[in-house]
Length: 328
Image (cartoon, rainbow, N blue to C red):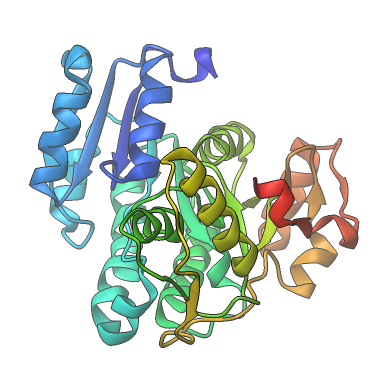
């Protein structure tokens, strides 16, 4: 990784979020020439500028939106690598504002694709979600569409050399808006933990695992692939009990309020998936991830030639369960 990014110019779109900050920290360690952060939140940029004050010479902050193609074109001038992290990601927000989600997650991704091709970017990596599999909500549907745009861009780019690929995330532990900070806050305040359904299952990953997946996928990508981290499955009821025990122990709390079930929110699924059945049939397995080749045959064959050591996946390896004891 050091040689891949040393002296390069990198753009992180949506770089002020949890994953963006961790990715920025990892990339700065390998001495790129510049890391540009494009986002529309001025306050988060202000906070991040303070956090990375000692990297002022290599870090640039740009206010902008993926919906603005002209702004993206300016941001990508002379850029080598693009990491596209920007999205509307909260399921209820996307359900109540579906066209806003389309404009950011779908049209915004197409704008990134066009700007990258026009500026001769070497590689573009798009971050997707397990909710894109058999989607039942607007967020998942827009992310699935964006995945398809990335794969199609790889096929349709003609003589241009930009490489497009995607990574598929589960729930990132501790990220803003995720359940772990919410559960911890509720315990500390002596409130009931509110969960939608104790039997709900979610794929979980740590921020460091997410960054490892992003960087490894970008290194391996030859065009059109979707990279999926091998993630454990967690039952939300077990997660809640583990958070209660760990938080009460950490802060010496006498917590006795327990858990209250509030039911599924609009668009939520009880069970998420990493891949469709059809994807499992063509996916290959590496040590820490699954690799789904492009749906377009020519590009899929290029992947298989470039990654000859990959093997067909074993269906039993797709789900790795974590119990409450494992979490604690």
